[in-house]
Image (tube, rainbow, N blue to C red; front, top):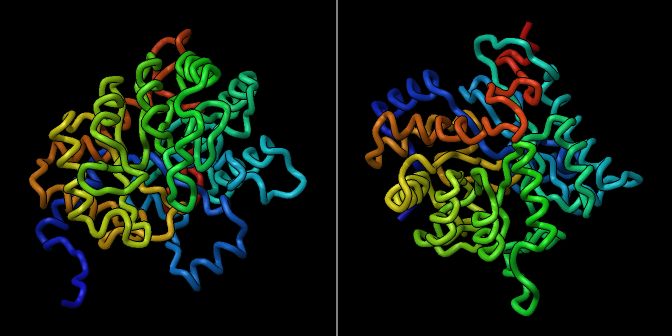
Length: 357
């Protein structure tokens, strides 16, 4: 049978549109286009069908917040000739703000805006120096993925960039320094992201952390056997911290989600295990080769909402998954600070591409 393109019904689409534009919507995991050389991205978009999904489409898509991450392992730093790993990450963070034409310290909000929260995926570039973590915090970074596609000083990965499981005869799990690092993240009020960690690292990190942790872009291994997905045990462990599992609408050349019905099935499984309060969305914008049928770029956030509605989630559930839950977790504060909404670590983009006045 010929492939049928995934589309919501007109009623579902209208309903989803209202929810997206009337609710807090957060993408827990995105990248600037500058995480790879421009000529590589242009070639990949033209010849390989890599999604074209610039940051400046976030406001029109109804996305209020997006965590935009630099890449801190060699995949993101190695090609920046003449720069140290730390400088290479700094260049990516700067490029993210320039790409979206952002201001650095918004004092108010305006209609049709997206607030960008900076993150880093893969703490390899920090080495064993915790003072660099403080520098990163001062720079405005509020979320750190412990690892990306390589084992590092903190712990071990689930898969390599080719999708292979790491060698079984090597050490696994959170290291002694990883425990210390996680404690400092907790102290600074920075969110720990375990999306690329293996099971041993994830379970131990959840036991050690005193604050909610997340897996920003993944799904349920019990629904589909894909190595970047996580087990029910890991889902329970993350939820026990008060944390989140970010639903990841990636296809990965057909190995992950086929369409947005799959997206909703993963959501249903996780909700049945631990409740809707532990679900969010992390699209991996500008970081994946392709998406599940029904999602091509940020403006299709409406389709994610429609898929959830189609599969029986009610309005309150959808609003929580689209951003309410993530907003709760992203409001973590340093141990020595009074609770207050974060502003100094965000950057604001308006739907016409200009700065908020």
